[in-house]
Length: 126
Image (tube, rainbow, N blue to C red; front, side, top):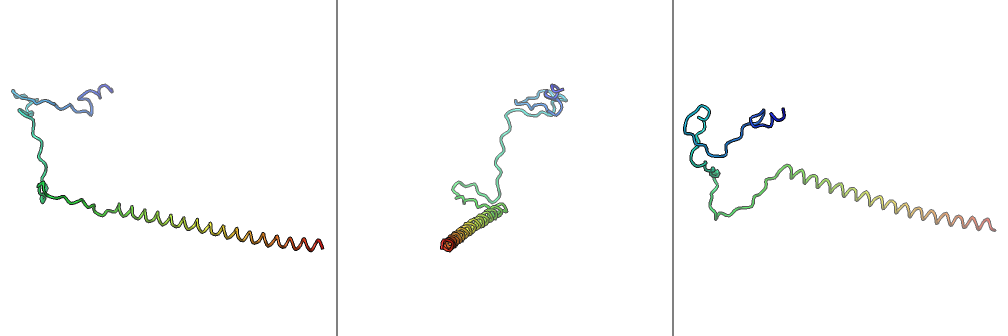
């Protein structure tokens, strides 16, 4: 069955187009639609856009891209990303500041407790 599908003219595959020019000398029911003789067809000319001149000395202006929703979305994303980065930086610096304050407080308590122990030691040794 696979061989049948792979053959030209099998299910789902059309017959290949002829690559050479065909000259018809006698009319037959199977080739009456073929009318190509002589040279191959010329390529189509470029489409002329109204309002555009084809002069080579005309200076071209740089193309200005229109404002798009994609550009807006990209700018909004970048702005939002920058805001989140700033907020994260503030959180980190604030937590570092709090940690420094905690360490200073801990050092103060340690010096106060050390003084208390010295006074207690003096009182006991008397």
